[in-house]
Length: 532
Image (cartoon, rainbow, N blue to C red; front, top):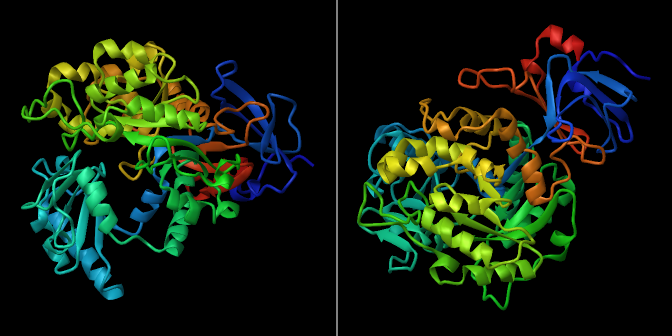
């Protein structure tokens, strides 16, 4: 029996198996270019069965609320992000005193629970205190306990003396080590520090994954393209398939394999499970702007002695061969390229490869002007909050002349690139609304406008968090269309009817596979509750 009103939103979203439910409202955005707006969407058994048809089953009147396809994060690290939930968070530290205070607090907490554990911190950014990167003396509060603090981009870290004594500090290709300061960059950080750092137990990883999924759902996310190591795919994801509520399309991070002998993929991870599937493999062409390791066509303005670093398959001149080897496995090659020289090398490799499975061009932050048209029809997986963060140091690093092609969202769209937005969590917040705000307004993390000529429309930003990542990664949602998954986000107001420089919508509910995985009635007024 249909009900025109529901007394409580949470109760309204308790959806029984086989139940037919129709959401009705004036603010239903479909992400479907053929029919962008709708007045109703009907779902049953986790799928959309009708758009703008006569309402069937139980009715939920959305009132002034906004319903859209649930958000998708084109590029994040779920296992890594989940681990940070138990680590020392240094993001936003505006001074050395604040940095050291957080280290001291976390060290004291560890001392009360585990005297042998490493102190692991993440999220520092020298832009937050407008100074130099930290050195090992900033970790003094850890005492004799080995400690490592990762820069927010995860491409550089600082360790204390206790950790330094345990690490190999010999030179390494594609990496840099400053022993006196305890700093490791790129391959030195990944291949010297990470293997020496104790990992959480498998049980802890599984528990962290559950927490991470709940957190991501609270942000309106139904799924994401996650970068994962095979050991975590086997030990964490495949052991948790029945409990997964966050859809994951995984890209394998393991990269040390001969091109003629790729690693064996778990059969069950290639079977097309609705919540988990391996769809690609990853390589890094260069580093990051913040660490001055992004590979540039011209030297850094504030460090003319370097133009960054080429890495891995790009450094060895085998990027195209690696991409073809990945495609021969029926997988999508995903390549990190931040500097304009790295982007050119990646585009050259794409030209030498097949179009399918489609390569994914990750980051593409700085492009030579003549390379912009080369992205026509290609997936550019980009992160608007990286622009908001890097904006604070971009002019110093690159000079004014290169800013016209720095995060050139609008120009890329004009040239026919397919923009898929993500966060790179835990590098920055996975909140898609913050990403939309950055893409639409051009505001940096300090609230100042930067390179606003690259800003795009709300419609384009929403598409980059819904339809395009669904196309790129093979998600069943991404659009409100018959036959698509019933993956929805409900916001408290329309993102098309606000001033993004002053306010943002809030997530009221997230529905995945026809089930409410998050709902927040606390932000609803009494009158709104009665309507819903």
